Length: 116
Image (cartoon, rainbow, N blue to C red; front, side, top):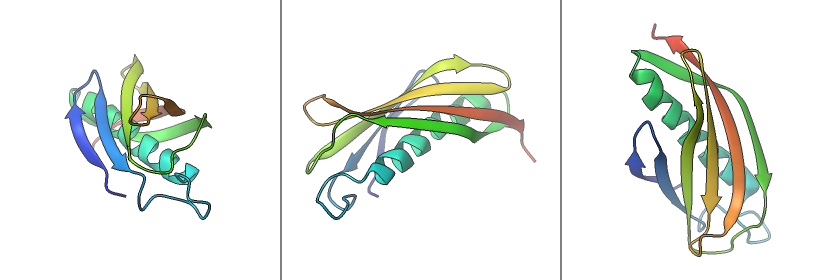
């Protein structure tokens, strides 16, 4: 998918991904690619929070709204916490194009578990 992590902390995770190689048959950014990268970045943000407790995180819910698409360029994926608890985290993940236009909004909830 070509994802690159630019920034990672408990406060936010920022990544980029090229549209090229992640298009559907009509030449648009594939909605499934948006969902996959959004879930990956949101889960990574949850894992970073969980690691501060010596724990790990697993996804339990994800939802997305596609606002517009892209045909070229690089998209930016930014995960920020809505809730950082001891057992659950919820992150908002925004996907934007190079002009800063919102392409997709995701919400992901992760369950924090003890490491095995």
